[in-house]
Amino acid sequence: MRTLYVKFVVITIGIMVLSSIFAFLVSNTYYQQKLKPYNDQKITKIALSIAAYTDGHSDMDLDEYLKNISTIGYQIYLVDQSGDASFFGEPFRDKLLSNIVKEYVLNGNIYHGILQFPQETFVTGFFANELKNTIGVPITHNGKNYALFLRPDIKLLFNEMHYLFGWLIVLTISLSIIMVVISTKYLVKPISTLTTATKSLSNGDFNVAFEITRHDELGELSQSFLRMARKLEQMDDMKKEFISNISHDIQSPLSNIKGYINLLENKNISQEERSHYVSIINSEIRRLSTLTKQLLLLASLDRNEDIINKKRFNVGQQIKELIRNYQWLISEKNIMLSYFLPDIEVIGDPSLLNTVWDNLLTNAIKYNKPDGSIEISIEKKQESIFVTFKDTGIGLNHTELERIFDRFYRADTARTRTVEGTGLGLSIVWTIIKLHGGHISVNSKDKEGTTFIVELPR
Ligand code: ADP
Image 1 (cartoon, protein in one colour):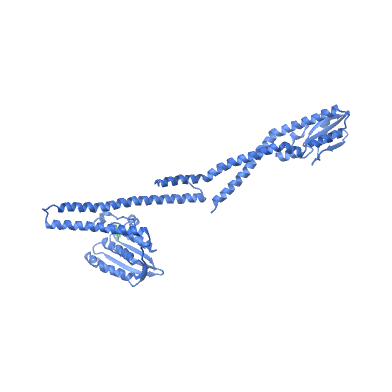
Image 2 (cartoon, helix red, strand yellow; image 1 turned 180 degrees about the horizontal axis):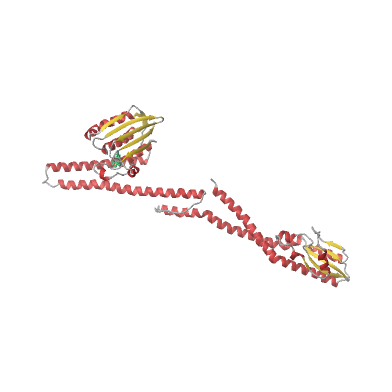
């Protein structure tokens, strides 16, 4: 898309054409209103002075005299009562002149052909080399009456017109400059808006808003800029929330530990109470330890992809081994676990993928219902493998589903309060799968159960 480029070219050409037309119209009006009457008067004056001269010098040769005048830069037509006519100077292109006009001048009147010349554009009007476009005056020489028609020839006209052309050029240039200044402002305005927005962004103010609805490169840039600003704002919010969550999750086990240590300092408590407090302290320490381990893992996953150590291994075997480790917990909760785990090989980081299965399995156990069930299966389809964890647990509603992969998010605290957790497990799962070029999807029905499906490229 090169619309900005096209806009620029079109505007520039438009300015050139418009300013020329405008300047031309202005000069034309000036010609019609001022220059034409002035010119008519001036030539009338010259014609009259020729008439006065011929009148007073009966001894001179009229033809010779008019020939001299024509060399200065005039076109002359002389006609007498009998219709005898002669031309002097540059020839007329159009020699048409009605007899009425000739009669009119011979009868002692002045003919203003230049003033009466049709109101056309000045180029044709002013330069029309026609006998009609002249000044006619009656002259007398040696007692004989003539009609003398006169107009300046092209060379003389050009000399007189040069300042008009000068004005035309000055006007065209000034108009172009004004229009260029205005149109460039229009073209550049979004850039200034973007610059201001960038400054406020760099000062940490993400709340930038502006309206640029143009359909060109700048419009597109503005849209991308706004999207980027929204994203940065979200990331900034996430960062703040993350820090506040970590602080809270570290602070609360610490205060619990401190509280129970204070209680332990009391010498008068029973052995039973003492071991109860110690077990609470132990569980809080375990919680802190899990939290820091998960945070460290997330941080290293975030930092780079280099921590992935890929190799070919058997996922079916790996998950079966994991199930064996959790057998005691599954039996304790009276959960029915069934699986279909054929030997399927995949290329990936065994230890990171083990963390994925671990999180999904412990969640399926933790958020299950008493006497619930879990089904785990692997399936091979074309270039991918699909690992499914299906449970008949407490399920998730629509709004919870949208957030479960967010860091620190734990659904419905009333139900999860009794269950230990940090809200980091699924975000770790999500990050590891992304790093493997895979995908995780989740289906859930509130109070009925949840299914996680992990897709990994083979
Ligand atoms: P947690 O440490 O709380 O288990 P996770 O990131 O693993 O954190 O899970 C986030 C939240 O998603 C959990 O707190 C829980 O509310 C919900 N959740 C995860 N797995 C399941 C599941 N199998 N059934 C129902 N809810 C689940």
